[in-house]
Amino acid sequence: MSQNPLENNRVYLCGKVVTPLNFSHESFGEKFFTFKLEVPRLSQQKDILIVTVSDRLLINVNLEAGSLVEVLGQFRSYNNPSNVGNRIILTVFARDIKNVESIDPSKNINEIFLNGYVCKKPQYRTTPLGREITDILLAVNRLYGKSDYIPCIAWGRNARFASTFQIGDNIKIWGRVQSRDYQKKLEDGRVEIRTAYEVSIFKLERVEKSENVS
Image (spheres, rainbow, N blue to C red):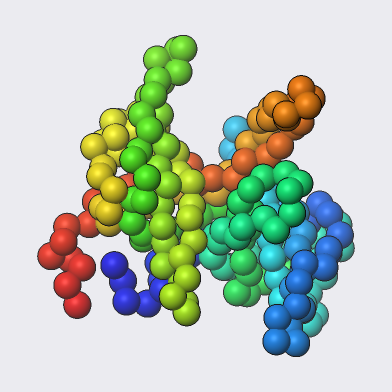
């Protein structure tokens, strides 16, 4: 894998802020906030994604609901310390953010590149209509010896190819970050609507071991 963890995980988003800033946590005197960003698709659907941003990036940036922004960062995973909602929190961690005047959905406004390792046996399946899908869980190295665990979905011929991957295979993925609502049945019988975040794969390749030699 690339020796620079900053290059293993790259996200670019352009969208509309749809929620106010919400305080997340503080680390070594640096405060972090989250907000939700609406990113349109060509299909007229929209992905609602969580963005985490440092207060040190907020100088001269308008993040009021309705403002348009461009975000450069990484797709990260965190364990949810509470028992509410999803066990794993997935968020786009902003490394840079700025306001823009407009959004053009015909351009690439939702892009992600990941270079990581398969850490769970890929799950291949077909839909009732015969569409092929493979779920991949990718471990991506981060700075300071940490890793992010990113769920990814391959479709069609990419799904068939991904079904051959083995645990430990080094994979490169290009795609977009997407949100998807689903129903979760709770222990008390209630049904709760939750949101899953994942990478929809456009292109992928298996890295040969010779490419990993520095």
